[in-house]
Amino acid sequence: MELVIVTGMSGAGRRSVLSALEDAGCTAIDNVPARLLEPLLSLEAKLNPSRPRLAVGMDNRHGEFVEEFMPLLERLQDGSIPVYTVFVEADDATLVRRFSESRRPHFLADDGDVGAAIEQERQLLAPIRAQASAILNTSRLTLSQLRLRIAELLPDLPMQGTTLRLVSFGFKFGLPTDADMVLDARFLPNPHYVAELKTLTGKDQPVREYLMNSELFSSFVAMTENWVHWSWPHLTQEGRAYFTLAIGCTGGQHRSVALVEQLATRLRRDIPKLIVQHRELGHRP
Image 1 (cartoon, rainbow, N blue to C red):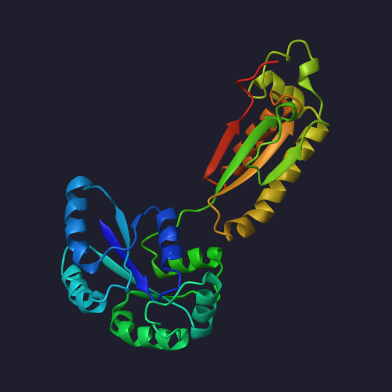
Image 2: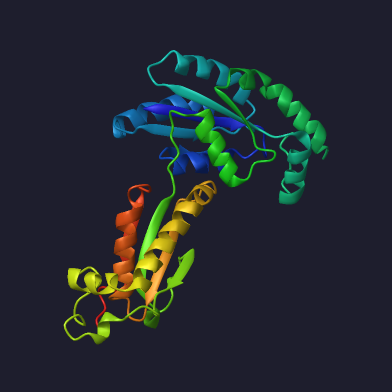
């Protein structure tokens, strides 16, 4: 098991980093007191011996945190579990603004002077910062940029990429509520009106052969494939887990299904994380 400890300045984004690590496949636990981490690791090793990674958030608001953390880190580093320590920080102006926007008090600002409290906290945490495996400044990072920075700082903890969902549906049953982009295929030749194809679906070879004889169908596939290839690097940089491209025809049985199947065959070569879903194949008019 690998252990990632996330700590740092109050208001710097520890919870956001933990969420990103959780999306990368870590089991994430927040607000673990230093004195409870070793018992937690021992229990975890017994209950989940195959657990690959554990991310632990440690809040420095506990009075004994700094005093207990340094010897704890030395013991962990001398043990058999690989340990990464991520220290999260931001510049003073950003931290002051975040405390103002959240209207939360700084735990060291008894007199209301947030700026002085931030400086005091920096001094308290300086020894921990000096021992960190990685220092992450979140002052000007968006969420997607934060995910990329974590992947750069901890290359042994690869971030999960974006999954492309290709969904076929029928407009008569309503739009997919989770679609990021919707394409309308109702202008294509409709196999529903061909007697021998009506009871089949777009997954059946006769329907696909019928549609492939249409120049409109071939152009639709080619242009959609080109758009996905062009846009995919930009979409994945946003750090999203899924991008859903929905293609609809009237009933969601023939044209949209065949389009999704054809696109999936072409796109899997470059986008291995691809899911195909045919929403209406359980419906029959």
